[in-house]
Image 1 (cartoon, rainbow, N blue to C red):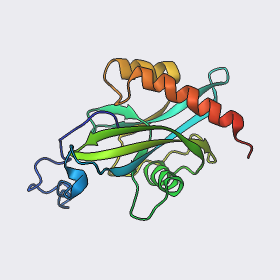
Image 2 (cartoon, rainbow, N blue to C red):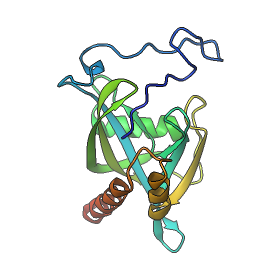
Image 3 (cartoon, one colour):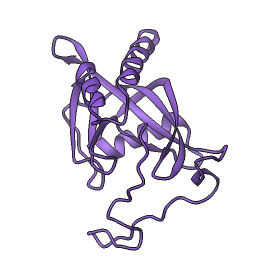
Image 4 (cartoon, rainbow, N blue to C red):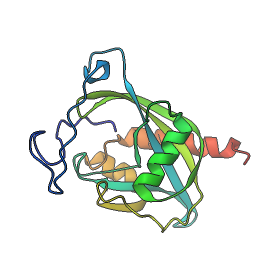
Length: 184
């Protein structure tokens, strides 16, 4: 969620999407001004599986062409009145079909995404579903993978993730620390 993109899926707002639905209008209101003190809240689900290549964690990344051909964790905007835990569980379920238990927040970033100012809160999650049971929503990502921290860093280093390699290292360490104190 770190990189801004002004591209609207399907072209200019006045053109219909191939499915016949109209493109959502660009955001309006206080959060639409990148200089505004207000921001909408977005959530990111940081989900890792530990049984990947010798017990080292692998991170769930979704291939999103609408965000500049990037590989990023699942996430999206919190809905009105929704708390962060409910929002990340809902977004992960909608985008991947997976169920997670949210351990807690570990990283936040103020950014501009599609012309809207967002506070993106990344939440460490424990996977409750079969890690290979990913079902992508039709309007979302075009692919998914379990990537090691090093693979995610490499994607970031060449601009194929909206995260920086440094932020990937940071969140991996923060998620590991949260899992250590998680007593459930």
